[in-house]
Amino acid sequence: MDRRTLAGGLGGFALVVAAVVALRTGDAPDTLKREIADGVEVVALQEPTKPANARAQALDPDALQLAWNGSAPAYEVRWNGKEQLVPGPEVELADLDPDQQTEVEIRAVSATGKRSEPLRIAATPKDLYDDKWDDLLVGQVDRFDGPEALDPRKWRIEAEPECLGLRAFGPGRRIDVDCPMAAFQSNTPIRFGVPAADGATGRAVISVGGAVESSHVQLTLLPDPWQYLNETDLQPHGTVSLDVTTQGTRIIADPELPRTGKQVALGDSPMTGLVAGVRHRWEMRVLPDAVVALRDGVVVAYEPVAIKSPIVHPRIRIDGGGFLDAFGVGGVPERAVPTEVIGLQQDTELPQDAIAAKIVTSRPGNQVEVTDIPVSTRKIPAVPDAQLVVIRKPESRPGTLPRLTDRPGGIKTGAPRLHVMHEDGTKPPQPLRPTGRILVTAEINAIGHRGCELELDGKRIVSLPTDEQGPGVPGRHEFWLDTKKLTPRSHARLKLIVLPADHGEPVIAETVFELG
Image 1 (tube, helix red, strand yellow):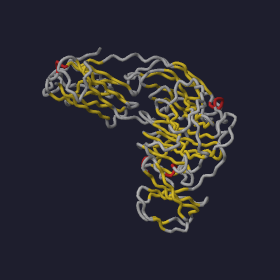
Image 2 (cartoon, helix red, strand yellow; image 1 turned 30 degrees about the vertical axis):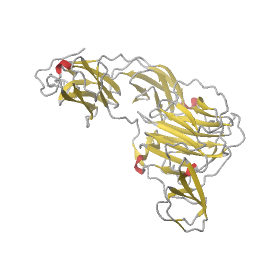
Image 3 (cartoon, helix red, strand yellow; image 1 turned 45 degrees about the vertical axis):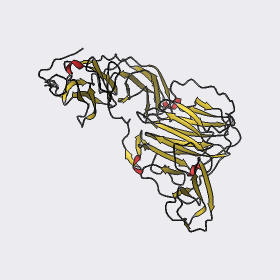
Image 4 (cartoon, one colour; image 1 turned 90 degrees about the vertical axis):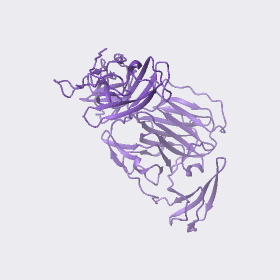
Protein backbone atom coordinates (compact mmCIF):
# COMPACT_ATOMS: atom_id res chain seq x y z
CA MET A 1 0.00 0.00 0.00
CA ASP A 2 1.27 3.46 -0.99
CA ARG A 3 0.53 5.54 2.08
CA ARG A 4 1.86 9.06 2.58
CA THR A 5 1.72 11.26 5.67
CA LEU A 6 0.69 14.82 4.91
CA ALA A 7 1.77 17.74 7.07
CA GLY A 8 -0.65 19.96 8.95
CA GLY A 9 -4.10 19.48 10.42
CA LEU A 10 -7.65 19.90 9.24
CA GLY A 11 -9.68 21.18 12.16
CA GLY A 12 -13.47 21.18 12.51
CA PHE A 13 -15.07 17.81 12.05
CA ALA A 14 -12.61 16.62 9.46
CA LEU A 15 -10.10 13.85 9.57
CA VAL A 16 -6.88 15.16 11.13
CA VAL A 17 -4.72 15.04 8.04
CA ALA A 18 -3.17 17.77 5.96
CA ALA A 19 -4.04 19.01 2.54
CA VAL A 20 -2.29 17.47 -0.42
CA VAL A 21 0.30 20.03 -1.42
CA ALA A 22 1.28 18.68 -4.83
CA LEU A 23 -1.16 16.58 -6.82
CA ARG A 24 0.79 16.75 -10.05
CA THR A 25 4.29 15.42 -10.59
CA GLY A 26 6.80 17.97 -11.71
CA ASP A 27 8.00 15.93 -14.70
CA ALA A 28 4.49 15.20 -16.04
CA PRO A 29 2.08 18.04 -15.18
CA ASP A 30 -0.92 16.22 -16.71
CA THR A 31 -0.41 13.07 -14.63
CA LEU A 32 -2.33 12.76 -11.39
CA LYS A 33 -0.11 11.74 -8.49
CA ARG A 34 -1.25 9.07 -6.04
CA GLU A 35 -1.63 10.64 -2.57
CA ILE A 36 -3.19 8.89 0.43
CA ALA A 37 -3.62 10.73 3.73
CA ASP A 38 -2.67 9.28 7.11
CA GLY A 39 -5.68 7.51 8.60
CA VAL A 40 -6.93 6.36 5.18
CA GLU A 41 -6.38 2.86 3.79
CA VAL A 42 -7.05 1.95 0.15
CA VAL A 43 -8.58 -1.50 -0.29
CA ALA A 44 -6.41 -3.37 -2.80
CA LEU A 45 -7.95 -4.29 -6.16
CA GLN A 46 -7.59 -7.61 -7.91
CA GLU A 47 -5.45 -7.79 -11.02
CA PRO A 48 -7.55 -7.85 -14.22
CA THR A 49 -7.99 -11.37 -15.60
CA LYS A 50 -7.84 -12.15 -19.30
CA PRO A 51 -11.38 -12.57 -20.74
CA ALA A 52 -12.39 -15.97 -22.05
CA ASN A 53 -14.79 -17.76 -24.41
CA ALA A 54 -15.30 -15.12 -27.10
CA ARG A 55 -18.44 -15.46 -29.24
CA ALA A 56 -19.57 -13.57 -32.36
CA GLN A 57 -22.81 -13.06 -34.27
CA ALA A 58 -24.21 -10.52 -36.75
CA LEU A 59 -27.63 -8.81 -36.91
CA ASP A 60 -26.53 -6.85 -40.00
CA PRO A 61 -24.13 -7.82 -42.81
CA ASP A 62 -21.79 -4.95 -41.81
CA ALA A 63 -21.81 -5.32 -38.01
CA LEU A 64 -20.56 -7.77 -35.39
CA GLN A 65 -21.85 -8.49 -31.89
CA LEU A 66 -19.11 -9.89 -29.67
CA ALA A 67 -19.58 -11.40 -26.22
CA TRP A 68 -17.18 -13.07 -23.78
CA ASN A 69 -16.90 -14.26 -20.20
CA GLY A 70 -15.38 -12.09 -17.51
CA SER A 71 -16.09 -10.16 -14.32
CA ALA A 72 -13.92 -7.05 -14.78
CA PRO A 73 -15.32 -3.54 -14.18
CA ALA A 74 -14.94 -2.82 -17.91
CA TYR A 75 -13.16 -3.91 -21.07
CA GLU A 76 -11.06 -2.38 -23.83
CA VAL A 77 -11.86 -3.56 -27.36
CA ARG A 78 -9.49 -2.92 -30.28
CA TRP A 79 -10.17 -3.53 -33.99
CA ASN A 80 -9.13 -2.03 -37.34
CA GLY A 81 -6.98 0.61 -35.64
CA LYS A 82 -9.88 1.67 -33.39
CA GLU A 83 -10.55 1.11 -29.70
CA GLN A 84 -13.57 1.37 -27.41
CA LEU A 85 -14.14 1.02 -23.68
CA VAL A 86 -17.30 -0.87 -22.72
CA PRO A 87 -18.80 -1.44 -19.23
CA GLY A 88 -19.71 -5.10 -19.71
CA PRO A 89 -18.65 -8.30 -21.51
CA GLU A 90 -20.34 -7.43 -24.81
CA VAL A 91 -19.85 -4.94 -27.66
CA GLU A 92 -21.24 -4.21 -31.12
CA LEU A 93 -18.92 -3.08 -33.90
CA ALA A 94 -20.67 -1.32 -36.79
CA ASP A 95 -19.68 -0.06 -40.24
CA LEU A 96 -17.49 -3.06 -41.05
CA ASP A 97 -16.62 -4.53 -44.44
CA PRO A 98 -19.09 -7.45 -44.82
CA ASP A 99 -16.58 -9.61 -46.75
CA GLN A 100 -13.46 -8.82 -44.74
CA GLN A 101 -12.37 -10.67 -41.63
CA THR A 102 -12.23 -8.37 -38.62
CA GLU A 103 -9.60 -9.15 -35.99
CA VAL A 104 -10.49 -8.02 -32.47
CA GLU A 105 -8.53 -7.86 -29.20
CA ILE A 106 -10.38 -7.69 -25.87
CA ARG A 107 -8.67 -6.75 -22.60
CA ALA A 108 -10.11 -6.64 -19.09
CA VAL A 109 -9.51 -3.30 -17.35
CA SER A 110 -9.28 -2.74 -13.61
CA ALA A 111 -10.72 0.30 -11.82
CA THR A 112 -7.24 1.89 -11.84
CA GLY A 113 -6.81 1.41 -15.59
CA LYS A 114 -4.57 -1.65 -15.61
CA ARG A 115 -5.06 -3.92 -18.67
CA SER A 116 -5.02 -7.72 -18.88
CA GLU A 117 -3.54 -9.88 -21.60
CA PRO A 118 -5.74 -9.76 -24.73
CA LEU A 119 -8.35 -12.28 -25.81
CA ARG A 120 -8.34 -12.47 -29.62
CA ILE A 121 -11.17 -13.32 -31.98
CA ALA A 122 -11.59 -12.96 -35.75
CA ALA A 123 -14.89 -13.04 -37.66
CA THR A 124 -16.36 -12.03 -41.03
CA PRO A 125 -19.79 -10.32 -40.69
CA LYS A 126 -21.25 -11.75 -43.89
CA ASP A 127 -20.45 -15.31 -42.80
CA LEU A 128 -22.43 -14.86 -39.57
CA TYR A 129 -25.35 -12.81 -40.88
CA ASP A 130 -28.61 -14.73 -41.26
CA ASP A 131 -31.17 -12.88 -43.35
CA LYS A 132 -33.90 -15.48 -42.82
CA TRP A 133 -35.09 -14.09 -39.47
CA ASP A 134 -37.84 -12.02 -41.13
CA ASP A 135 -39.15 -14.70 -43.50
CA LEU A 136 -42.18 -15.31 -41.28
CA LEU A 137 -42.99 -11.62 -40.82
CA VAL A 138 -45.74 -9.91 -42.80
CA GLY A 139 -45.73 -6.43 -44.24
CA GLN A 140 -42.78 -4.08 -44.11
CA VAL A 141 -40.32 -4.20 -41.20
CA ASP A 142 -40.12 -0.86 -39.39
CA ARG A 143 -36.53 0.44 -39.40
CA PHE A 144 -36.12 3.18 -36.80
CA ASP A 145 -33.28 4.80 -38.72
CA GLY A 146 -34.32 8.36 -39.53
CA PRO A 147 -36.67 11.32 -38.99
CA GLU A 148 -39.51 9.60 -40.90
CA ALA A 149 -39.29 6.39 -38.85
CA LEU A 150 -42.16 7.28 -36.49
CA ASP A 151 -44.74 7.88 -39.21
CA PRO A 152 -47.98 8.96 -37.46
CA ARG A 153 -49.92 6.74 -39.87
CA LYS A 154 -48.20 3.74 -38.26
CA TRP A 155 -47.30 4.90 -34.73
CA ARG A 156 -48.76 6.88 -31.86
CA ILE A 157 -46.16 8.20 -29.43
CA GLU A 158 -46.56 8.90 -25.71
CA ALA A 159 -43.39 10.67 -24.57
CA GLU A 160 -41.95 14.09 -23.89
CA PRO A 161 -40.86 15.39 -27.32
CA GLU A 162 -37.38 16.44 -26.21
CA CYS A 163 -36.51 12.96 -24.93
CA LEU A 164 -36.54 11.36 -28.40
CA GLY A 165 -33.65 11.79 -30.80
CA LEU A 166 -31.44 10.12 -33.38
CA ARG A 167 -28.15 8.64 -32.24
CA ALA A 168 -25.27 7.72 -34.50
CA PHE A 169 -24.85 4.02 -35.20
CA GLY A 170 -22.20 3.08 -37.76
CA PRO A 171 -22.89 5.04 -40.95
CA GLY A 172 -26.56 5.51 -40.01
CA ARG A 173 -28.74 6.49 -37.07
CA ARG A 174 -31.25 4.90 -34.70
CA ILE A 175 -33.99 6.32 -32.47
CA ASP A 176 -32.57 7.21 -29.07
CA VAL A 177 -34.92 7.24 -26.06
CA ASP A 178 -33.66 9.32 -23.15
CA CYS A 179 -36.57 9.78 -20.74
CA PRO A 180 -38.13 8.01 -17.75
CA MET A 181 -40.88 6.48 -19.93
CA ALA A 182 -41.81 6.42 -23.60
CA ALA A 183 -44.59 4.35 -25.22
CA PHE A 184 -44.88 3.53 -28.93
CA GLN A 185 -48.31 2.22 -29.95
CA SER A 186 -48.36 0.48 -33.32
CA ASN A 187 -51.34 1.09 -35.61
CA THR A 188 -50.60 -2.24 -37.32
CA PRO A 189 -52.45 -5.05 -35.53
CA ILE A 190 -51.45 -8.72 -35.30
CA ARG A 191 -54.15 -11.11 -36.50
CA PHE A 192 -53.52 -14.72 -35.50
CA GLY A 193 -53.71 -17.30 -38.27
CA VAL A 194 -52.83 -20.89 -39.09
CA PRO A 195 -49.76 -22.14 -37.18
CA ALA A 196 -46.48 -21.75 -39.10
CA ALA A 197 -43.71 -24.33 -39.24
CA ASP A 198 -42.54 -23.31 -35.76
CA GLY A 199 -46.09 -23.57 -34.38
CA ALA A 200 -46.66 -19.82 -34.07
CA THR A 201 -50.01 -18.31 -35.04
CA GLY A 202 -48.54 -14.82 -34.75
CA ARG A 203 -45.41 -13.03 -33.59
CA ALA A 204 -43.80 -9.68 -32.87
CA VAL A 205 -40.08 -9.00 -33.23
CA ILE A 206 -38.17 -6.05 -31.79
CA SER A 207 -34.50 -5.15 -32.12
CA VAL A 208 -33.45 -2.85 -29.29
CA GLY A 209 -30.44 -1.87 -27.18
CA GLY A 210 -30.26 -0.77 -23.56
CA ALA A 211 -28.71 2.05 -21.56
CA VAL A 212 -25.84 1.61 -19.11
CA GLU A 213 -27.34 1.40 -15.64
CA SER A 214 -31.00 0.51 -16.01
CA SER A 215 -33.20 -0.05 -19.00
CA HIS A 216 -36.58 -1.73 -19.11
CA VAL A 217 -38.32 -2.65 -22.36
CA GLN A 218 -41.81 -4.10 -22.61
CA LEU A 219 -43.46 -5.36 -25.77
CA THR A 220 -47.14 -5.82 -24.93
CA LEU A 221 -49.94 -7.39 -26.99
CA LEU A 222 -53.12 -5.47 -26.16
CA PRO A 223 -56.63 -6.68 -27.01
CA ASP A 224 -59.19 -4.15 -28.21
CA PRO A 225 -59.88 -1.43 -26.96
CA TRP A 226 -56.90 -1.14 -24.56
CA GLN A 227 -54.63 0.12 -27.35
CA TYR A 228 -56.48 3.45 -27.25
CA LEU A 229 -55.72 4.19 -23.60
CA ASN A 230 -52.56 5.79 -22.25
CA GLU A 231 -49.79 3.64 -20.85
CA THR A 232 -50.06 2.84 -17.13
CA ASP A 233 -48.43 0.41 -14.73
CA LEU A 234 -51.77 -1.40 -14.45
CA GLN A 235 -51.96 -4.54 -16.57
CA PRO A 236 -55.06 -4.49 -18.81
CA HIS A 237 -57.27 -7.55 -19.13
CA GLY A 238 -56.14 -10.22 -21.57
CA THR A 239 -52.64 -8.84 -22.18
CA VAL A 240 -49.31 -10.63 -22.51
CA SER A 241 -45.98 -8.79 -22.30
CA LEU A 242 -42.40 -9.56 -23.24
CA ASP A 243 -40.54 -7.99 -20.30
CA VAL A 244 -36.82 -7.31 -20.78
CA THR A 245 -34.38 -5.69 -18.35
CA THR A 246 -30.61 -5.67 -17.96
CA GLN A 247 -31.09 -8.67 -15.64
CA GLY A 248 -32.98 -10.91 -18.07
CA THR A 249 -36.17 -11.67 -20.01
CA ARG A 250 -39.56 -13.01 -18.94
CA ILE A 251 -43.14 -13.29 -20.17
CA ILE A 252 -45.84 -11.59 -18.05
CA ALA A 253 -49.44 -12.71 -18.72
CA ASP A 254 -52.78 -11.63 -17.33
CA PRO A 255 -53.58 -14.16 -14.55
CA GLU A 256 -57.10 -14.51 -15.97
CA LEU A 257 -55.83 -16.01 -19.22
CA PRO A 258 -56.31 -19.81 -19.45
CA ARG A 259 -53.32 -21.88 -18.30
CA THR A 260 -52.39 -24.80 -20.58
CA GLY A 261 -49.60 -26.75 -18.88
CA LYS A 262 -47.43 -26.46 -22.02
CA GLN A 263 -43.70 -26.98 -21.44
CA VAL A 264 -41.02 -25.38 -23.61
CA ALA A 265 -37.31 -26.19 -23.41
CA LEU A 266 -35.07 -23.18 -22.76
CA GLY A 267 -31.94 -22.66 -24.83
CA ASP A 268 -28.38 -22.35 -23.56
CA SER A 269 -27.84 -18.58 -23.49
CA PRO A 270 -25.27 -17.08 -21.07
CA MET A 271 -27.01 -13.69 -21.23
CA THR A 272 -30.75 -13.09 -21.65
CA GLY A 273 -31.26 -9.36 -20.97
CA LEU A 274 -30.52 -5.93 -22.38
CA VAL A 275 -26.94 -4.79 -22.91
CA ALA A 276 -25.73 -1.21 -22.95
CA GLY A 277 -25.20 0.04 -26.49
CA VAL A 278 -25.61 -3.41 -28.08
CA ARG A 279 -28.60 -4.45 -30.15
CA HIS A 280 -30.32 -7.79 -29.69
CA ARG A 281 -33.37 -9.21 -31.38
CA TRP A 282 -36.25 -10.41 -29.23
CA GLU A 283 -39.15 -12.37 -30.64
CA MET A 284 -42.51 -12.79 -28.93
CA ARG A 285 -43.82 -16.00 -30.50
CA VAL A 286 -47.51 -16.78 -29.88
CA LEU A 287 -48.45 -20.48 -29.99
CA PRO A 288 -51.99 -21.82 -29.49
CA ASP A 289 -51.01 -22.94 -25.98
CA ALA A 290 -48.04 -20.75 -24.95
CA VAL A 291 -46.21 -17.49 -25.50
CA VAL A 292 -42.45 -17.91 -26.02
CA ALA A 293 -39.63 -15.34 -25.81
CA LEU A 294 -36.51 -15.70 -27.94
CA ARG A 295 -33.33 -13.62 -27.82
CA ASP A 296 -31.33 -13.79 -31.04
CA GLY A 297 -33.17 -17.00 -31.93
CA VAL A 298 -32.60 -18.72 -28.57
CA VAL A 299 -35.57 -19.49 -26.29
CA VAL A 300 -35.06 -17.60 -23.01
CA ALA A 301 -38.54 -17.60 -21.41
CA TYR A 302 -42.11 -18.77 -21.90
CA GLU A 303 -45.54 -18.72 -20.27
CA PRO A 304 -48.06 -21.57 -20.76
CA VAL A 305 -51.16 -19.45 -21.52
CA ALA A 306 -53.62 -19.23 -24.41
CA ILE A 307 -54.47 -15.84 -25.92
CA LYS A 308 -58.18 -15.81 -26.75
CA SER A 309 -58.38 -12.57 -28.74
CA PRO A 310 -58.14 -13.15 -32.53
CA ILE A 311 -56.41 -9.81 -32.97
CA VAL A 312 -54.02 -7.84 -30.73
CA HIS A 313 -52.23 -4.50 -30.91
CA PRO A 314 -48.48 -4.33 -30.08
CA ARG A 315 -47.11 -1.54 -27.89
CA ILE A 316 -43.45 -0.86 -27.05
CA ARG A 317 -42.62 0.77 -23.73
CA ILE A 318 -39.10 1.86 -22.78
CA ASP A 319 -38.21 2.94 -19.24
CA GLY A 320 -34.80 4.29 -18.27
CA GLY A 321 -33.46 4.84 -21.79
CA GLY A 322 -32.42 2.74 -24.74
CA PHE A 323 -32.46 2.82 -28.51
CA LEU A 324 -34.86 1.35 -31.07
CA ASP A 325 -33.55 -0.45 -34.13
CA ALA A 326 -36.34 -2.44 -35.85
CA PHE A 327 -39.82 -3.89 -35.37
CA GLY A 328 -41.96 -6.39 -37.30
CA VAL A 329 -45.02 -8.60 -36.89
CA GLY A 330 -46.14 -11.99 -38.18
CA GLY A 331 -49.53 -13.60 -38.65
CA VAL A 332 -52.29 -12.78 -41.11
CA PRO A 333 -51.34 -9.65 -43.10
CA GLU A 334 -53.06 -6.47 -41.84
CA ARG A 335 -52.73 -2.87 -42.97
CA ALA A 336 -51.82 -0.03 -40.65
CA VAL A 337 -54.91 2.02 -39.84
CA PRO A 338 -54.15 5.76 -39.38
CA THR A 339 -55.52 6.49 -35.94
CA GLU A 340 -55.47 9.54 -33.70
CA VAL A 341 -56.34 9.58 -30.00
CA ILE A 342 -57.41 12.93 -28.51
CA GLY A 343 -58.05 13.61 -24.82
CA LEU A 344 -61.54 15.01 -24.27
CA GLN A 345 -60.63 17.64 -21.71
CA GLN A 346 -62.51 20.22 -23.77
CA ASP A 347 -64.95 20.36 -26.69
CA THR A 348 -63.28 18.83 -29.76
CA GLU A 349 -64.15 18.99 -33.45
CA LEU A 350 -64.20 15.75 -35.40
CA PRO A 351 -61.71 15.87 -38.34
CA GLN A 352 -63.19 15.99 -41.84
CA ASP A 353 -61.33 12.86 -43.03
CA ALA A 354 -62.63 10.61 -40.22
CA ILE A 355 -64.17 7.34 -41.39
CA ALA A 356 -65.00 6.17 -37.86
CA ALA A 357 -64.92 7.61 -34.35
CA LYS A 358 -65.54 6.38 -30.82
CA ILE A 359 -65.19 7.54 -27.25
CA VAL A 360 -63.18 5.27 -24.95
CA THR A 361 -63.66 5.87 -21.23
CA SER A 362 -61.82 4.34 -18.28
CA ARG A 363 -64.08 2.93 -15.59
CA PRO A 364 -63.39 1.74 -12.02
CA GLY A 365 -62.19 -1.82 -11.61
CA ASN A 366 -59.86 -1.75 -14.62
CA GLN A 367 -62.82 -1.57 -17.02
CA VAL A 368 -63.25 0.27 -20.33
CA GLU A 369 -66.41 1.62 -21.95
CA VAL A 370 -66.58 2.25 -25.72
CA THR A 371 -69.20 4.45 -27.43
CA ASP A 372 -69.38 4.78 -31.21
CA ILE A 373 -69.82 8.32 -32.59
CA PRO A 374 -71.40 9.08 -36.00
CA VAL A 375 -68.83 10.65 -38.32
CA SER A 376 -71.41 13.31 -39.17
CA THR A 377 -70.94 14.69 -35.66
CA ARG A 378 -68.92 17.87 -35.86
CA LYS A 379 -68.21 18.67 -32.22
CA ILE A 380 -67.64 16.27 -29.31
CA PRO A 381 -68.32 17.67 -25.82
CA ALA A 382 -65.74 17.30 -23.05
CA VAL A 383 -65.86 14.01 -21.13
CA PRO A 384 -63.72 13.39 -18.01
CA ASP A 385 -61.22 10.50 -18.23
CA ALA A 386 -62.17 9.82 -21.85
CA GLN A 387 -60.34 9.61 -25.17
CA LEU A 388 -61.72 10.41 -28.61
CA VAL A 389 -60.49 7.81 -31.11
CA VAL A 390 -60.49 8.97 -34.72
CA ILE A 391 -59.89 6.43 -37.49
CA ARG A 392 -58.96 8.26 -40.68
CA LYS A 393 -58.85 7.54 -44.38
CA PRO A 394 -55.90 5.35 -45.47
CA GLU A 395 -54.17 8.27 -47.19
CA SER A 396 -54.51 10.52 -44.14
CA ARG A 397 -51.58 11.48 -41.94
CA PRO A 398 -52.84 12.22 -38.42
CA GLY A 399 -50.70 14.54 -36.34
CA THR A 400 -47.12 15.43 -37.17
CA LEU A 401 -43.80 13.63 -37.10
CA PRO A 402 -41.96 13.94 -33.79
CA ARG A 403 -38.97 16.25 -33.97
CA LEU A 404 -35.89 14.02 -33.66
CA THR A 405 -32.64 15.90 -33.11
CA ASP A 406 -29.26 14.30 -33.76
CA ARG A 407 -27.34 13.05 -30.73
CA PRO A 408 -23.81 11.70 -30.41
CA GLY A 409 -23.30 7.96 -30.41
CA GLY A 410 -21.44 5.96 -27.80
CA ILE A 411 -22.47 4.48 -24.48
CA LYS A 412 -24.18 6.69 -21.94
CA THR A 413 -22.88 6.73 -18.39
CA GLY A 414 -24.51 7.51 -15.09
CA ALA A 415 -23.44 9.73 -12.22
CA PRO A 416 -20.90 8.54 -9.61
CA ARG A 417 -22.13 7.26 -6.25
CA LEU A 418 -20.66 7.56 -2.77
CA HIS A 419 -21.60 5.21 0.08
CA VAL A 420 -20.57 5.11 3.76
CA MET A 421 -20.86 2.18 6.20
CA HIS A 422 -19.32 1.42 9.59
CA GLU A 423 -17.49 -1.88 9.84
CA ASP A 424 -20.24 -3.08 12.20
CA GLY A 425 -22.76 -2.71 9.36
CA THR A 426 -24.37 0.58 10.47
CA LYS A 427 -25.23 2.96 7.62
CA PRO A 428 -26.43 6.56 7.49
CA PRO A 429 -28.79 8.15 8.32
CA GLN A 430 -28.08 6.27 11.57
CA PRO A 431 -25.15 7.80 13.51
CA LEU A 432 -21.96 5.78 13.11
CA ARG A 433 -19.97 4.55 16.11
CA PRO A 434 -16.96 6.73 17.05
CA THR A 435 -14.75 3.64 17.31
CA GLY A 436 -13.44 1.23 14.68
CA ARG A 437 -13.33 1.97 10.95
CA ILE A 438 -15.66 3.41 8.32
CA LEU A 439 -15.81 1.96 4.80
CA VAL A 440 -16.20 4.53 2.02
CA THR A 441 -17.23 3.10 -1.35
CA ALA A 442 -16.86 5.21 -4.50
CA GLU A 443 -18.66 3.90 -7.58
CA ILE A 444 -17.47 5.60 -10.77
CA ASN A 445 -19.53 5.13 -13.94
CA ALA A 446 -17.56 7.43 -16.25
CA ILE A 447 -15.67 6.10 -19.27
CA GLY A 448 -12.29 7.60 -20.13
CA HIS A 449 -11.50 9.49 -16.90
CA ARG A 450 -7.96 9.99 -15.58
CA GLY A 451 -8.47 9.84 -11.84
CA CYS A 452 -10.56 10.60 -8.80
CA GLU A 453 -10.16 12.59 -5.61
CA LEU A 454 -11.87 12.25 -2.24
CA GLU A 455 -12.41 15.23 0.04
CA LEU A 456 -13.44 15.27 3.68
CA ASP A 457 -14.90 18.57 4.89
CA GLY A 458 -13.27 20.41 2.01
CA LYS A 459 -9.78 18.88 2.40
CA ARG A 460 -8.35 16.30 0.04
CA ILE A 461 -7.59 12.95 1.65
CA VAL A 462 -7.22 10.79 -1.48
CA SER A 463 -5.83 11.44 -4.94
CA LEU A 464 -5.99 8.29 -7.09
CA PRO A 465 -4.97 7.94 -10.76
CA THR A 466 -7.22 5.60 -12.77
CA ASP A 467 -5.34 5.63 -16.09
CA GLU A 468 -2.42 3.36 -15.22
CA GLN A 469 -2.23 1.75 -18.69
CA GLY A 470 -4.87 3.75 -20.55
CA PRO A 471 -8.07 5.77 -19.95
CA GLY A 472 -10.06 4.91 -16.84
CA VAL A 473 -13.24 2.84 -16.85
CA PRO A 474 -16.29 2.41 -14.61
CA GLY A 475 -15.19 0.81 -11.38
CA ARG A 476 -15.50 0.54 -7.62
CA HIS A 477 -12.97 1.96 -5.15
CA GLU A 478 -13.06 1.32 -1.40
CA PHE A 479 -11.31 3.21 1.41
CA TRP A 480 -11.17 2.64 5.18
CA LEU A 481 -11.30 5.72 7.43
CA ASP A 482 -9.97 5.42 10.99
CA THR A 483 -12.57 6.91 13.37
CA LYS A 484 -9.80 7.82 15.81
CA LYS A 485 -9.06 10.72 13.49
CA LEU A 486 -12.68 11.93 13.51
CA THR A 487 -14.42 14.16 16.02
CA PRO A 488 -17.27 12.44 17.93
CA ARG A 489 -20.80 13.93 17.86
CA SER A 490 -20.11 15.67 14.56
CA HIS A 491 -21.24 15.64 10.93
CA ALA A 492 -18.71 15.00 8.17
CA ARG A 493 -19.10 15.74 4.47
CA LEU A 494 -17.45 13.52 1.87
CA LYS A 495 -17.04 14.60 -1.75
CA LEU A 496 -15.99 12.34 -4.64
CA ILE A 497 -14.50 14.16 -7.65
CA VAL A 498 -14.07 12.30 -10.96
CA LEU A 499 -11.56 13.99 -13.28
CA PRO A 500 -12.22 13.65 -17.04
CA ALA A 501 -9.34 12.80 -19.34
CA ASP A 502 -9.99 15.93 -21.42
CA HIS A 503 -9.55 18.18 -18.35
CA GLY A 504 -13.19 19.25 -18.65
CA GLU A 505 -15.58 19.86 -15.79
CA PRO A 506 -15.21 17.20 -13.06
CA VAL A 507 -18.19 15.07 -12.03
CA ILE A 508 -19.02 15.19 -8.33
CA ALA A 509 -20.93 13.10 -5.79
CA GLU A 510 -21.36 14.02 -2.11
CA THR A 511 -22.68 12.47 1.07
CA VAL A 512 -22.88 13.48 4.75
CA PHE A 513 -22.71 11.15 7.75
CA GLU A 514 -22.93 11.65 11.52
CA LEU A 515 -20.48 10.28 14.04
CA GLY A 516 -22.34 9.33 17.24
